[in-house]
Image (cartoon, rainbow, N blue to C red; front, side):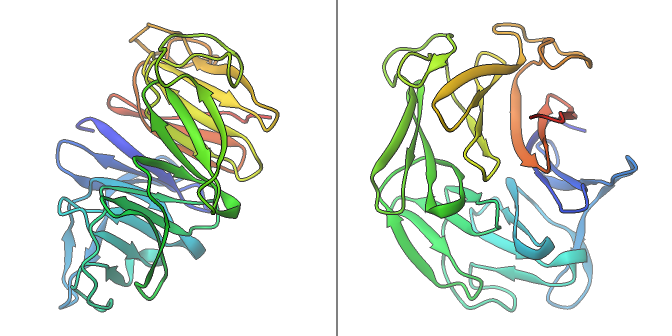
Length: 263
């Protein structure tokens, strides 16, 4: 791999990762076989497509965001492509997405200067809130954002649900929401049951349960190396984070890691 970033996991435990060097979508089957994903163009000819980020959609589909920031849906087995940017069989919708996330049911949300939009399968959109950057989505329309050294959640009405850490005070400390400190939260993954996982800039992954308790479940603060073994061994800088089943999946440098099973 040439430096991995975004990661998504299919229902069959197939892992999809974005290779930053080539901007290709790489596929890791459950048996460990790695391949470069291809999809047919409008003439049915397979081609390697450019990807910036990837997320799991509904019913085995995938979403990816291309260098032009247009979200695209790929149906299972890469049989059909729907580009929400006026190309292919999708409606002609000029939809720019600076950030993209899906909830555990595969609902797509994007954020751009106009705010956060929920995108339907037919390409129609519904505005949710004016906030950015969007980092994750959860069931019930809960959306997660970062601000300084904090992560906060908004419900579908735009009301704040909780905040982890302090937007102004960076550091490293586990505890309850207001007492916990984050250094530089970059990524969030939701399990759909009220627990979220935060990839922090100090090379740790923090777990926040529904009662507001924040703990470190992977990595060692400040350690940039990584090795396989117990999750609290050094982890390095996490560039991609996804939840599937009972485990976290992450990208670190040129590797994809599975952390779990987790309670």
